[in-house]
Image (cartoon, rainbow, N blue to C red; front, side, top):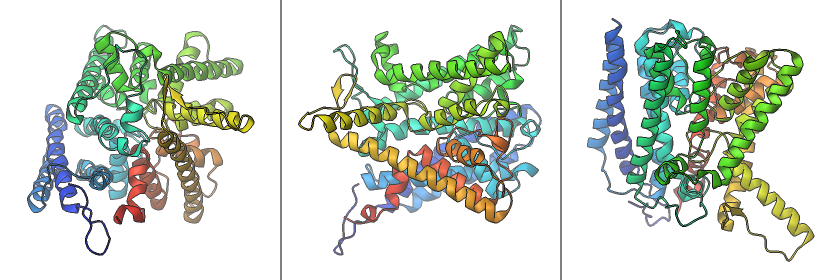
Length: 506
């Protein structure tokens, strides 16, 4: 139901209807606690953290639905409210098994919430210092939280962001030339179901591939548990691992297989669906071509730098450079080596890739490749019109002209992204200096911490590196990083909209 305006001129956001939908989300979330409970039972671990958390989540959802008035449809304002609030609320309930497990690493409510928010936003930043010490059930819950977050972002891209012309369906359904390509014009529910099936199918395929690698002896360290756990965090481009050394723990066959799935996970899911249904046509998409070109170019640059320093040789050099470039650009955040020892230039390339991110319509974070592409074309048009003032130069994507409102929104989004990035970096530097926990925080650590959380990547540079942890940050800094993860996953606008006066006024 759309927002209503009372006599005073203020729009009345239907909070009751929005909370009713949040309650429905929590009821569905309560079912997810069954999987880690089964894993815990199989391994002889305590079930009660998952049973209690599931009961509390389902009970809260049921109570919200009973005490609020549901609507068949909610308006645009309520949609923003639901998206922003649901991610905060869901992260709280995801954190409950961490708190109830009695694990010393997750004893602090703030630390447990940080880990839960990192999971649900598919960031992969962690406050854990000993991942291997987690019980199997809790480790699987940690992995599953990222898979659920990846499913949620697909719906966000379809249902909410299109209203703002900054992500969503306009960029998700980039026009492909040729009459043979069918646009996704079905209902949101139908489209979401299709993409969820694709998402689940790719996850299942990765489980099979990784399990076969383990069963055939190509990588004896890859167990079925690890195959499931890492498939749950590859497709959502999450990056949580069940081992402290991340993917470095596994062999070359596993690493190359995960590279392939990360590349796919960073692509536009609607484009993948069309390509599978129509048996091709994806290569004509300009964003896809630029995405793959950037992966190849960055991998080549990093490879040349690593070879010049003699850090690796042969296949290992190629694998390490390709793996880390793909992992960072797709914002997965897996690590196959400690890139803290790499030349600073290679580290800067990775930070740049953190900011760019993957394709629109994927589970990847960052600004998105298509926005960077469109920004370059907007800047080129401005230069052309500076020389030829009367020229009319439309901005085109895949041969179709974009309307000016969309072009302006893309520029505004990137500007907002830059402003929040700078504000986050300054906030971290200030709070850490005042807290004296990291008074000597380097600029690489500050910028990479901001880039990796805002872009939902995971690891950073320095003590935040691939084998590091966010645990040393002060409580206030952890709060800043939680907000950056939350805002970055929701693509900024739904969060910022709630802070404007216009949202609460007609």
